[in-house]
Image (cartoon, rainbow, N blue to C red):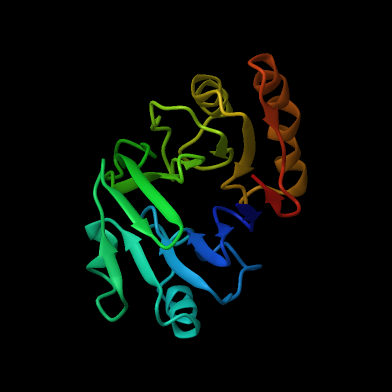
Amino acid sequence: MRLTKYEHACFTLEKDGKLLVVDPGAFTTDFGSPENVVAIVVTHEHPDHFRPDKLKAIIAKNPGAIIISHEGITKQINDLPTHTVSVNDIFTIGPFSLEFFGGQHEIIHQSYPRIANLGIMINDTVYYPGDSFVKPNKHVNVLALPVTAPWLKISEAIDFCIEVKADLVFPTHDAIASEFGKSLPDRMLPSFVENYGGKYQRLAEPVEI
């Protein structure tokens, strides 16, 4: 598979000429409307992950594609093709097998109601927890690790990373950070990943996994 990281929380996986898109939200300004998309996964309803106009643009170019998410998302976009999933579901679309974990967004503040959030494992290879630190309780080859957020401390990201023990870790969810701010996790995390035998890498270019 070919993994391409975009701004903030968005990334794509390409296999057999087909494309899976994850979380093309409002903070992702470098992602357009590619062809050969079979599905778009949305982890939760915050606008940095869920932007209906972007979904419409992708579907317009890929009318056979579907949007995959929990009911809180799919009921908001009944004018687009959707498939509703829940925690522990496994769903196959094109060359991609998707398994879903978690259920809730991390706590931002006790005064904020928690919303639904899904972690996703793709082809038993790439794991992305959305806005959470829910573990998949299975081996992870590639981990998309949130490193900057109102709900996040770097100590939590480090602990999650150590617990998951992915072979390759790349940072995500960081459009709210300056270039200097992005350099902080890039300096702090590699040693923890290397200690258990993994590799930390910021993905400036697509990689084969």
